[in-house]
Amino acid sequence: MTETRSERTSTWLAEAGLRPTRQRLALAELLVGDGKDRHVTAESLFAAVERSGEKVSLATVYNTLKAFCDAGLLREITVDGSKSYFDTNMTDHPHFFWEEDGHLSDAPSEELSIASLPDAPEGAEIAAVDVVIRLRKG
Image (cartoon, rainbow, N blue to C red; front, side, top):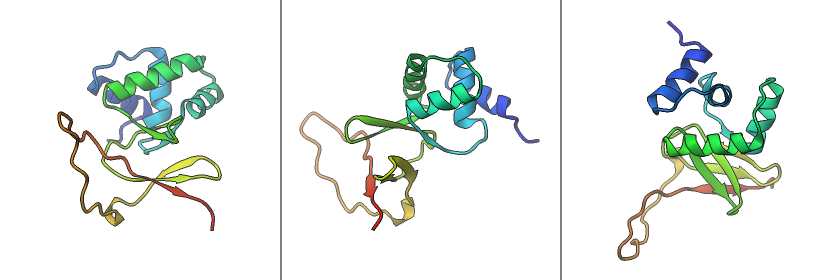
């Protein structure tokens, strides 16, 4: 039996131990309701929720995205130190950043090879390695 959008959304929140508020359900359905992975900004998710007819403030979108990240449901990818994208694909994988339109997309993991990393400074450990490959039309 195929899971419905509503069931997928509720399960996604429940597995992370998050209470299914109206706002969380509305945003989660836009993020994972169709079962496809996506990259969103807070602004693009806010625009999508407005188009859906739900009433959710931009501040609530930001707070909810942070809660989803804290719960391990989303990964935040920062580009240029100022622009954050939120990725529903939690596997380790690189990204392409398209400079012309500010679009982030998955890059093929199997084509990436990192031969070595520098040692972490004393008292620190490497938590993650994010690879963002910047592209522009040639």
